[in-house]
Image 1 (cartoon, rainbow, N blue to C red):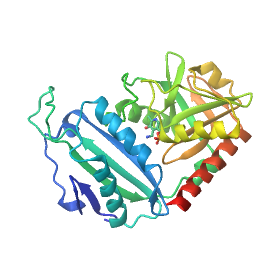
Image 2: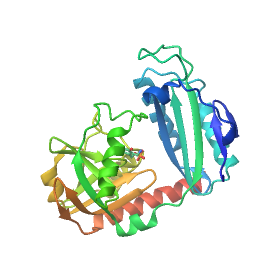
Image 3: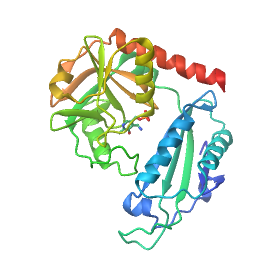
Image 4: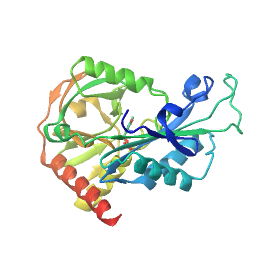
Length: 285
Ligand code: PMP
């Protein structure tokens, strides 16, 4: 297999040589966290922001890093190099490690960090033409702010969307739109941007944070306030964001509400400004 070097503990080894214990808590309980970082031209984008969130997720789950975050960053850089990634992603995960299966975790357990890197081009088609979405109830737990390995609510929603020929599921909790199954959600109304506040009900996306900074620079008002499914339906423009997608326009929603949307000027402007940030980052490396 191509790109076969992986991070296992603190070593870069061949993927075939990995051995994970049957009773690793990540495997038994989904007891772990992860990050996905995009690599542009060989350089990871917003690496520090991603690893700050990684440390926050660990701390919220009372989980200790087996070595320093600086070393995790160094290992990530080695992993990218070993796999010769120009454009792609690097996935880093940490579980609470192996122990005889029991719900109660010990604070001193030996966390296990693993990671892989993969070549991947930004999804130009989705960015250009937009994607269809499907609105479905948000059945996830109440700590969506933690980037944990427990993603069943997300994966089930993504399957429902795909079964309706949609590229992303949008989620709502009792009529309040939260986010996408693997993205943050924004609507535009009268040239103002609205997105769910960074509470326990959403993941505070790194791309989301860039977009909020950009709206500030561009003099666009952003309302970090909950909005309803009716407001989603009546929006002028809708878009979603994530590390792997950057910004993708939403051209339609089906399911709990139905609407179609044009790809508007605010979405296009934010897409362009985010691309500028990514380019600048490469120049400054
Ligand atoms: N929300 C969820 C549920 C996600 O899985 C993701 C993608 N990791 C995001 C939002 C977007 O976060 P980011 O911009 O950091 O990729």
